[in-house]
Amino acid sequence: MDAGRDAAVERVVAVHAHPDDESITMGGTLARLVAQGASVTVVTATRGECGEVIPEDLRALEGSAELAAHRTTELVVALTALGVADHRFLGESSARAPGLAPRIYRDSGMQWGPARVPVPLEPVHPDSLTAAAENEEVADLVAVLRQVDAGIVLSYDAGGGYGHPDHVRTARIAERSAELLGLRFLAVLPESAPPLPEDIVIELSPADYSRKRAALQAHATQLVVDGDEARLSSGPAFPVGRIERFRPADNSRATDAVVLERPTLGSRALSGVVGVLLGAVVGAITTVAHQSTVTIAGMPLPIGLVAALAGVLLLLLGLRLVLIDRFVAFCTAMGLLGMIGLLALRSAGGSVLVPANGLGVAWTFLPALIALVVIAWPRLRDPAPAAVPDAAVPPAPVR
Image (cartoon, rainbow, N blue to C red; front, top):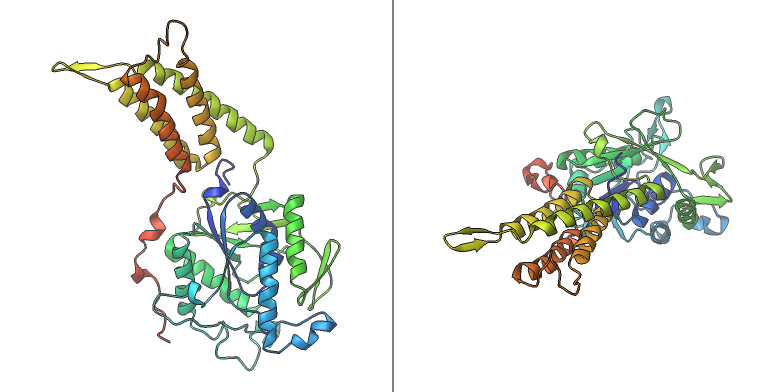
């Protein structure tokens, strides 16, 4: 993981099976990404229609048509606690393959099959997630990933975390969709998964943890949160995780993964100081050179100004492309513009390095314009995923 990359330029899509999964498995990570400025979209495959209800005063919702609406409301509150503003249910109009009418994927439920293997609840509902065509679900998710210009997809490992059929299907949908578009896929790992060197370990800050805990509390039908512990209907209390672990899929570029670790204050300050010094050096060199001209056919050509402006553009643009980090580029621009301003200060005899002529005026304003455009530009990254042809996406059945 590259600590020099800026999460603000990332577009992350987290794909989950039911309301509450986003908070339990990666709530702290989602909160951190939002706080760092990343664009985060959460896609939930079902509305959790088959979920068990814990509180006695809400037990009447279990098995009723009202449970889906209630869990949707809980999800809205949880996502608000995490800071996530963009949520979609798979199959609705904002998360549907082009040309297909909106639909609802229902919770498949879970029961124990032969050899204690989790299987969908019987009788299987025809609209359940596991009964639907997987290619249709992939096409729906691909539509979302293209709409938001996603760069990273988060979901579960191949086992779905604990084997729930909807989790297994959701993980497969998410990874297939990411692979089709050439996107990075990171699987959140259960605590029981043995660690590997390539794992991305997220140690939650107190703020991350607080937001995660608030999100868990919002899912009141499914969880009881008591201090630093939570309890589902299906088992004993467990600690609210302060560590969330992700593993890049084989098709992902592990060395180019999303920045989930927050840079330390010291490393951030050091990169800013280096940026300012680099900008000051380049500002001094280009200021000295900007007045140079070459006369051809009696016409002076401002090659010094052109070269100096090109140097400024290449420096700042290079920082945005290589680091994808506005902070370093901003500090470098401040050092560069500060040096230009310092050398342009007029003494009693006027500035020697930046005289009051056309070249001097241009040099005073154009570097600032270049810096403004490069730093304010919303995103500088490889657009390759958008070039995937529609034919590469599996056809969805006509409904």
